[in-house]
Image 1: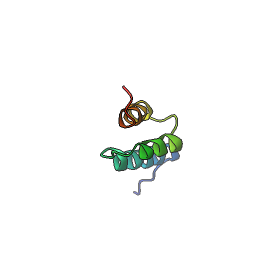
Image 2 (image 1 turned 90 degrees about the vertical axis):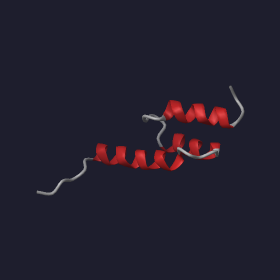
Image 3 (image 1 turned 30 degrees about the vertical axis):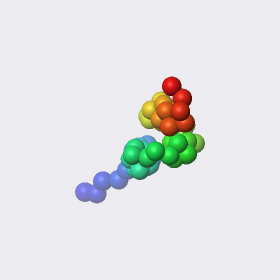
Length: 58
């Protein structure tokens, strides 16, 4: 029996891979790229907070 990914689960895996590649970043542009690619997904709040912090906001 082979397993296949549904469109939704594939999107989640892609998003997680993208997010994992950004988590150690000190570059706000990388978080902004995540926000452009996944504007309504799970890590949006965290990505916005990191952009703000890295740009010197409080």
